Image (cartoon, rainbow, N blue to C red; front, side):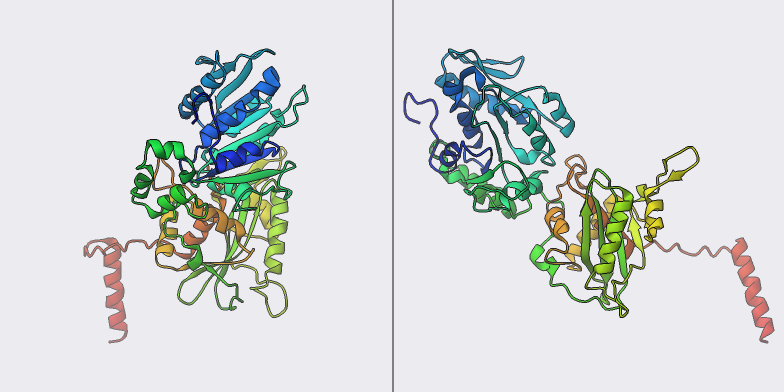
Length: 470
């Protein structure tokens, strides 16, 4: 950094991102160490002089302790760039003096989506989410678009975010920012947002400040011992599942070309129910070698039980791989569902109803699935290890192929999946596997006590049988 210059973007990700101030939504990320947090501070600082007190910023992290890095980076840049700047510890904000008044940059935490409601009365011209993949979904991010406003008509108000591959929010970030343009650097207008957005990848090798001061940083990344982590942290590869619960998942081995299911193969369904959260249903079949196939999938949020039942019936009827001789898709022999679907919901003083009742009224008769989470995950992992789980490719099972490989492990219970993640397809697959491969019950050794009632009666039966045929 040249003497006398508070902050200057380095060539690569930082420079491209600073020049993209006209893009309302921007995500920077990839490998570890390209200077993402430094960019966020520099991007906010870029418009302080021009807009003065009308320029108001806020940076979010998942928890307050995680803001420490942001505070230190902010002091490095803002104290030098704007003499007289103060950081107020009690209120967690930088206050920058300006002829028009004080410019504020607030640092806040947001652990849950509900926390976003606390900021609805606030107005900001610049909003940033540092390490966006630490949130389980993008609902808080989208909700706070509502506070991006200015009574002074500032033209380039914007949202900025950073992150690395992995984390509980890997898949939502990848789907929204990465998948539309994996190479980055292009404006995305695909209907998912009313605002244009862009992804700009970063690489550790661009951060010459870090590497000049710590030449061995890359070698330390290479030595972490986990090739998946190395690929994600060093190369910024968003197609690897960092910290995935299902480490044996290999998409290239699991995905198969769709084919017609023989009529003799058992066909059944599995269902994880939600209303505000997604409902996930899939058709499954088992071949002669006890391999499990997922044929097609339904995934939808924000609908009532009757709507889900109607759409699932249509999916079953129209499935091209289970067609009957008389036309139409073969109905499943059984549907194994989330046991919570049998909980009654009082509609009037005289009528009670459950989601399972609604499905039955629509011709979908459900059976209670085994909800033993730990055993269910073990069964799935066993199938993966033995290469006995297959999924039809193409668009038939898109949600499954996007979410299950990236399900994170629960940090507090390593035997379970993190329930804050998008685990609906995983739960449904768990019901399917627990039905198809029921854990064997131990055979109790026979008690041969001659005075035991059952044994006495058995001996009498044998004596009578011998006399009858004597």
